[in-house]
Length: 191
Image (spheres, one colour):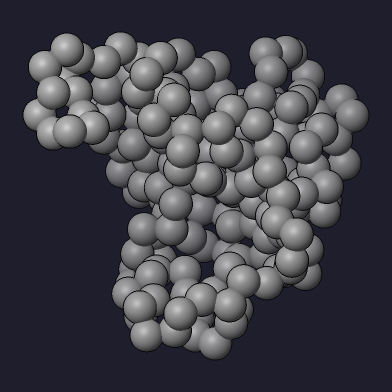
């Protein structure tokens, strides 16, 4: 190991990188679409973020080995379902390999017919805007077309390789420091 600082090293493997990145708590989404036979497909995705307000863009990062990504790319449309803390089973279903992930999942069609999972905190129907190489993942930028209703519930969070839930439905941030946070709407409703 060659330390560059008292606590850092440039000699790390993928397991160590994953452990370090696991210190960043994320929400959990399920990205869905319809295949060429109009059957629903989807996968669990924690690599998701709001990207731009004007124009309204989001991004997600599917693995290059994903079987669902080519279906989304061919369709050119997808729906991001932001999971609530009551949907750990949904996350587990869509995070595991398997043929019919929708067998036990209740969903409704978005305006474009894409799967909106019931009890999700919200959903966003998007069109694929661009795709960029990102190592062993793709970086997909989507343009938000339609926003779903926002449910008042707690988010499903992923942290250090496991699920985590908040104890309180709201977090009150230090107001002045958050002016540049993309998802902060002011007041104490930024999460």
